[in-house]
Length: 337
Image (cartoon, rainbow, N blue to C red):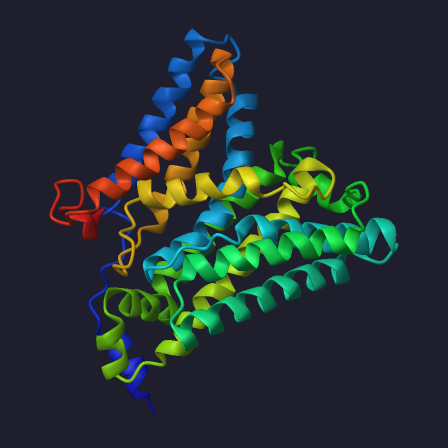
């Protein structure tokens, strides 16, 4: 027998982006990414190249995983500022478990992800139960996690990553001549699309984001849905922490600091309107490639690395200004983009 909430979710028009004719925005973003990469040859003879492409997709993987979780939070009007703390904690737990204590990688991964889920549960409960602004709760949680991470390492040198994780995410591992991070990046794109745009849970989150009051009146478990978003967001950060651990080789406290702004920027460039329930995962996915490509080209120019932060800050501000009016031409027809 179909429950009331399931009936409501299925009856909601599917406004999520579709593959086929509805891929205009992702295609445009991809074309711009390729154009930027080709233009990079002006500054470096190494652009474009296969190795540069692999490097871009490898770094895009980390942005995409974080942007998936952040995008879900932004769909319902929140903002998760605990990303760096969760990334550092997840990476540190796994590195300590394997490199310092000498235990197996699989159990370490489960412990790291379990800790991330607990963080998400606490964040989600405080936000949903007491209606505290999400950015305040997650900012405070980020500080707690940073202190906790320093405590468990006793302020010593960052522990090393296990060899298995390094081979998976550093680019040294290959599958049919293609770096494993590139393969995983493609899988993240496919899985993220089906979770956000095709699952009943994803549609429930979109309905909740578009109108929490209507969702509550309709009988949907809104508190449970809201908490689940923060759990999934923290889990995504925990997964990204493990990936970045393999990429960097050790569990640095600042491991996630430089990745939060790109994740937010990717979500906004992808067309997600904060608190609207309208999310476009494939656009966010392609935005990760575009922003990473721009970063690589900036590095090739020899300009200071600080220009990357200027870029991301400008992108976020521009996106927020455009979203002040949802009837702005940028958003017209977004349901099909």
